Every structure is written in C-alpha cells, then in structure tokens.
Image 1 (cartoon, rainbow, N blue to C red):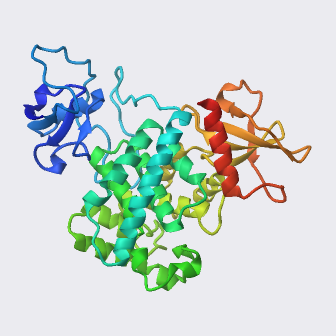
Image 2: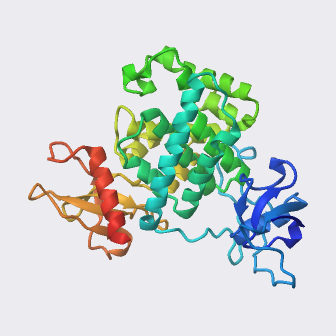
Image 3: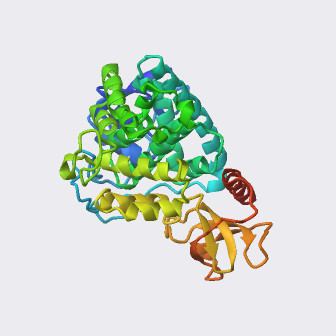
Length: 425
C-alpha cells in the first residue's frame, strides 16, 4: 500500500517509494530504497523534500503511537565537498569533531561480500555490454537504463570498499571495453565516496566512469582487429572516441552536464598534453582529473601492459605534472598502496597476492601465499593479515613472476582470491 507522509514522519525501516520534488532537491541518487541508515534518515529530514511516498508492503508503516526517534548525531548539511566546489589543489575536508561524525558503516568482510560482488558484476556486465551494443546501433542511452548498474556498484562499495574492484581485477573472462567501463565506474564511486562528495556527485562520478568510453562503439573500425582493446588503435583514430561519445550522449538529453564534461575531458592532462582540447591546469574540473587517474590506472593493469597494480600506482606517482597529486594520493588511500591483485614478495621468501585491504593501514594488506622462492615450488598457501601478524612477516617489494612455473596470471589471481574468501567464510 502506498502512503504519503511528511519527512518528519519518516522512520528507519520504511521503504521509500518516491521522493517528492526534483531529483536534485534530495541527497540520494536512488528513486526507491529501504531506509535502513540513520545518516540517510538525517539527510532526508534536512533536505528540501517536503514529503515522501512509502510502500507499507515492503517496509515499516507509520506507527499508531509515537515512536522514539533513533539517536542521530546532527551535522551540517552537505558537509562533504562537491565536485563543483573543489579547488584544483585538493585540501582535506574539514570535519566537525563529535561522537559519530563522519563515521562510515562497518565494512562487510571480503569473504561475505565476494559472492554478492560476483553476482553484481555479472549482472552489471550484461547491462553495460547491451548498452554499448545499442550505441553501435545508434540507440540512445537513458539514465534509467544504467541506474541499476550504478545502484549495484554503489551498494557493493558501501558494504566493502575493495571487493567489487578486486573481483574484477581477479576475473579473466570479460571483454576489455565492458570490464574497463565497469571497473572505472567502481573506482570513481569509491574515490568520490572517500573524498566525501555529495550523493549526487558520487552518482555523477560513477555514471561518468561507466559511460566515458561509450564513443568507442562509434569508431569506424572493427575492434576485433585489436582484440577489443581500443587503446591499441592508432592515435588519430583512438582520440575520436571522446568527441563521438560526448556528442552522442548529449543528444540523449538526460545525461547530467557534469558527466558529459568528464566524457569529453577524461583524457586531458594537467600539463596540456592531453586531448581533445589540450586543456591544462585549472581548466580541467575535479571530476575529469579523477577520471584521468581512474581510467589510466585500470588501463595500465588490464590493457596491453598488464602491470601489477602496485606498479601502476608507482607509474602514476612518477607523473606529478600529468595527474593531480592531491587527488592521486586520495586515490592511493582508496585502493591501497598494494591494491587487491598485487603480487608481493614477503620477508619469509614467499610470494603472495593481496586479497584484501586493512582500512586502518593500506600498506599492510591481507595476502594469500602461493610460492616459496628457495625451493622454487608452489605452496598450499595460507592467508595472512599483515597488520595483525605481529611482525612475523612483511612485504619487501613487488614480486617478479618471470620464469616461474605458474598458470595464466588471470587464472592464478582468480583462484587465489576464491581460496582466500572460501577459507574466511
């Protein structure tokens, strides 16, 4: 049963069927959702929304008697930075001290999120591949077509910051363009969330990551000739995809303007060496600077070079005039010094792969061992939380897998992540 109530009457456990007013008058990107987060309840009550429609068959109804409101720590509205207000040099977001302010919900363990993320990634890849195919056929993409993907990625990132992208990194059977788009979308959502963007700006960041390469489908070339990887095309042809994507999506009519600008500018660089307009410095907006980092990082680890994720981080840091240093450091904090999928050499002379992160110290991740160097042989393997092993082992550097008798790297990553999650479940 649908029922209209004022925002003052909204309680945790209610299913929000509709928020009255413009999409941009409220702080949520979802149109329908179960309200189970006290912070979301607070933001809704402080928003410009006068009333909501609740579905009492899917959530809590209005109580007949007064119900004690949950304890919610108040805070300034829109305390987080937004893409529009960010300056070129990223400063820490000021936070008012007080109990519970800015506290994120407890992360779901990787082992529990692994299955959900795998299902979400599979569903999302099907939606993304369909959308890209329809673009090739000239059919416009609408926001509602991709909202389920953004919702699924955002929900996974909320539950565990590292699981979704770690899973994509350790899967080996996806078409490059579709997997890349989904990976960049997840990275953009995670980065925007870490930088405390507003919900609407997080939505735009994720949408931009998902759609920034949609113009690839309109290039006058058969991508099969380069194994589906458009980055291997000659530069004059490859660079057309940003203008083609921008023009096509602008004609769709309902893609937000900040998203369109990212699609056009995600290959611009701070030093003016990018394309298509050769923009530099402050002329490049924050979302486009973020997209440049997320896009390049995923290209380095999944494209032709197939760099180890930790090597890709090092490569990005070596280009301070190309990528925004402040945003890059926020990105490293987001994915970890040794991102999931990185192969590392331990002090114990074992090789291991990073299978999870420790949010308290991203330099001390959780690893899964698989090789013993002195005997040059595979190990049964064990999972080690380096932040909690009391110095018994530690990372000495990035592993060199050359000349080792190992299976395909993609298959190795997938098996190690699955083994670690199964052991922890």
